[in-house]
Image 1 (cartoon, one colour):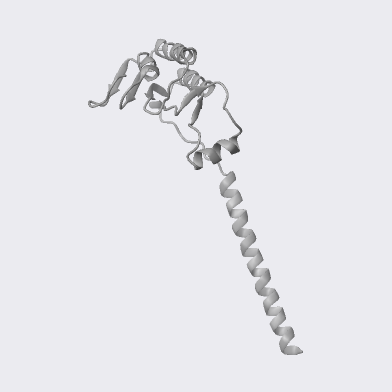
Image 2 (tube, rainbow, N blue to C red):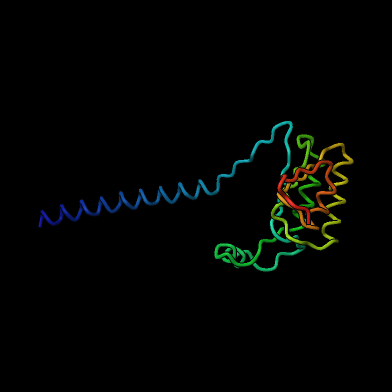
Length: 162
């Protein structure tokens, strides 16, 4: 019985060590996931606003369904109007943000009232003495409306304005 008892104790010790290693790995992943670093913003920075999809006031489905839809190439992405307006308002009062760069390449057609709200926010931003620059490969009517609110528009030389 002595031999089998020794083997059993060795196996039990290996099991405890492996469980401890597994627990440490899981604990490490949890700490890494919970560790959030706040990005540092230099004294002179630009805020890039690149809305994707249609501007909406409320997302069309729950987050899990949207994540599965995007992973499977499903529904078109949506950008919350309130998020865009809040970003512009925060940048207006932040002395480190000197300009906004509007990347309009992935913006889909959106309602005129939503575009007008963003236009008002951009004009307020410019009235605070800061610059707005719009960039795109090509512009449709919605994108052009927002680009017209900028002080400078950069369009690909081979791009189109629809």
